[in-house]
Image 1 (cartoon, rainbow, N blue to C red):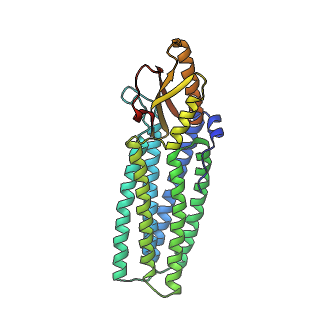
Image 2: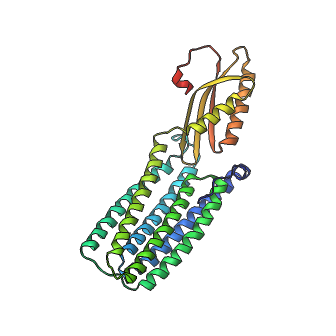
Image 3: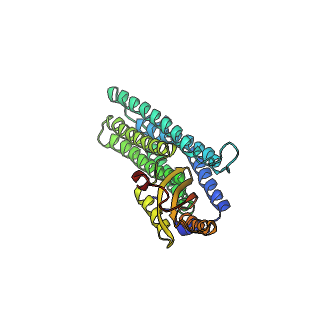
Length: 312
């Protein structure tokens, strides 16, 4: 499956190198997607397979998604400005919503075409050509996934990781098309091709749901997982002079993330000491959560009653 980000590598690579790696991944994705669209269009024209049409549609969507990823990743890389002081990270989930809508619409079209083929069955032709093209496509996608795995380990990019995961799905779709072409001939049944195409349409719908759900979570500022939030609390409270924290708020925006909370300390501590402690904790959290902006407010312990919800 997809490699997990390597925290040690991420910390050791500077921002410019990470941006170069992200550009490599997006450029490679665009090139591969365009090549696959061309060869699969030829294969569909020659075979007439509706399963091949499903694979072609998936590659068209991959090409559209690749261009969307390229645009929105570059947008997300832009530094904060006067109109976007939190940066441009939410460009990524906006792009994700576009991807989800395009993929969902194409899945519905493929489903309708498959039902038509069930009503009016047709045998695919030139199956040897179709199988050869699917094997070539699978090899190209496998190389792309290897490049994306390399980038994910060094950048932690969520959008590239998602694209790589989609690449595994593409390989599965290609194998499904090969199965459809082989079984249609072996079993002498024209119904196998549209049935497998319906399965591929369901795969596309599932992918659209996953992409859309992730995008909505980021756009709606969904909190980190409870495990991650508890880890933040542990990092902050392990300092000897910190008594507790409250009002922990977290959110993600593309490649960036934001963490903020109130730090409870001895009210007799002077401002310089409190500031130094907050800086130490901020750096510690950023080491564990790269590409994160941490905002800490220092509170004298016991100065106000804290609502139980803010402790959660």
